[in-house]
Figure 1 (spheres, helix red, strand yellow):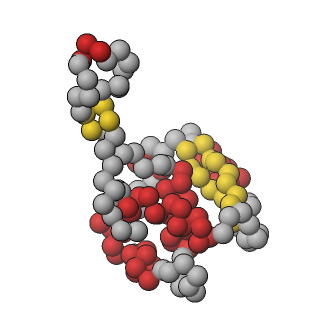
Figure 2 (cartoon, rainbow, N blue to C red):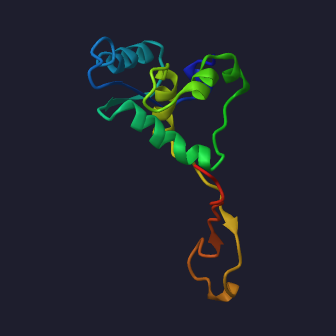
Length: 143
């Protein structure tokens, strides 16, 4: 797995979930200290989630999957994450820690939808930058 220097990470999100008092509340300060000792200039965002885990997962993955914009490195296929994703059901008792972690990442980095250039009027009438482009969304999906 690449180190922070190789990824050139400028910020890392770390935190815990409501009720998880084991290490979550100490993790951000520990991470800051270790990054400083390693000589890395990287911000650490402290996050505490009080929402239901199922809702966090559903909110983060629904739009991304519906838009077909979820991409992962091929090494992810060698981890338990893919099986966890296949078997997870809201209200179920299966493993969901990986899904929750990825949901947090998706929440931190919103999906960027591509712009579709379309001439909607005479080019001389366009006076605002970006006014000639539309965002085309494919709504033919079954949630």
